[in-house]
Amino acid sequence: MISKIPRNVSRRFGLGLAVVGLLILAMGLFLARRDNRTSRGVGPPEQTFDFVRGWTGDELTHRFTLRNEFTSPLRIKDVLSSCGCTVAGALPEAVPPDATVQIPVTVNLDQGAGAFSSSVTVLFEDHDPVRFRITGDVVAQVPDRIEFPNVRRGERIQKEFFVKALPGRAITVKSIEYDSACFDVHFERSSEGDWRVEVSLTENIPYGFFEKRLNVKTDDAKAPEKIVMVNGHVYRRLEAEPWSLYLRSGDKVGKNTLRIFSAYDEPVVINRIEVEPQGYLSIDLSEISPGREEIEVPVDFKGKYGTELIRGTIKVHAQVGGLDQSVEVDWFALVRVGESSSKS
Image (cartoon, rainbow, N blue to C red):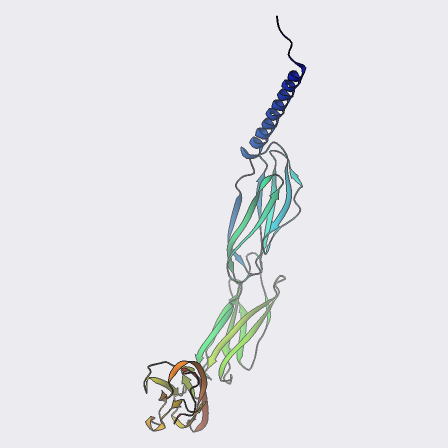
């Protein structure tokens, strides 16, 4: 004889079967979805294209291919761009299964010469992002600067540079703005389609250091004005080296030396030397031989070395080629705190 199963037990058993069934169904859906999202995909998490070389002011575009290998639509949530990099055109909201989409990535090379790396990151719903990166080197159309280091006034020294045409795009130099008191500038088109610019110093360029701009005006629609800095140093009739004298602990008389000279091969006669602040340095003019093109001036520090920084000047007055000239240099020393400047 078979006994009846209690009703409450039957209900519990049926409820348990229902729960187990739901768990099995949920696990099946999870595994199916996991298989859908991980066994297939959209390719590597990052794709890179190297342009190798681009020009300052140029705009480069490369089309990356994105393929949806899932069995369901791949929905694009957002697009993030690094500096100077954008997606050219609108992307679809979703990519159908087994379909491909072209993603045009554009970079503007507004930076200076050197390596560049820009990227676009595409964010998806329910999928890891994919990054598309563009790399290469920027080649400047003009140099950042040209230099004329330590030249004599009146010397006809000439430097040249080129304004380079972009690949497939001709360029014309319309004019160049410059300081005519310092430079003579000429430009002409070269046989390769670039423009050669010649820069020379004028005979009456001012003495001392200079830093000037050349504004090269072109018909380039993206960057019509190219800036080139020109800097250098024109020797004065009387010069000193070093321009800054650093007095260190343990230095002896004659070890700290100023070199006073004429850059134009003229005799130098030192008349007097002024030191500020007074009392720290000793300079004996009797040790100096006059009438030479180059004179070494020994400088003796009379104070006691310590931790307080003192800064002063040494101004040399002399005759160079029969004309009164002067030159000034800075000096630095560490002295004892509270050290008086009234040395005897």
